[in-house]
Length: 163
Image 1 (tube, one colour):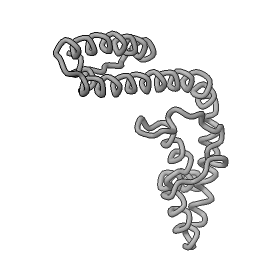
Image 2: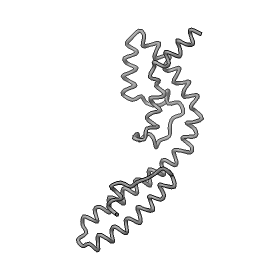
Image 3: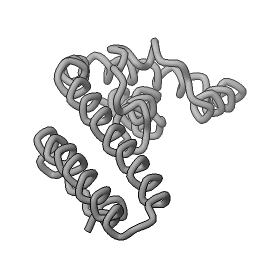
């Protein structure tokens, strides 16, 4: 019992390489969110600068080497437990995210094109025509994005141009 509690405490103290690497694929601000996750991130994903620093600091200390060993063992265990979730993510979530990103990129390109045309337009009538044309296009993209993600709402500066 004592050995198990020491192992669990050391696992809690460890940064857990697997969780750090998974964070790069789950963060909404990370480009990795749209990429397939390797099924064993601990062993197959290249290390970030933070993890490299963490490893180098630990390998230079007597206490750090066992902690790093426990960290790798814990990370491999987490990778194994999370494998079904990773498979589901790669096969179902990633195609939807990629499609979502493509539509969002098209919408942003259309918006940029509309802004350029509005800057060149001279009369009010021209500006109204440009606004109505591009509002229809962006609304179509907006509906497509809402189909992919029910929580999607995009009433921001880009829409204000057409209102």
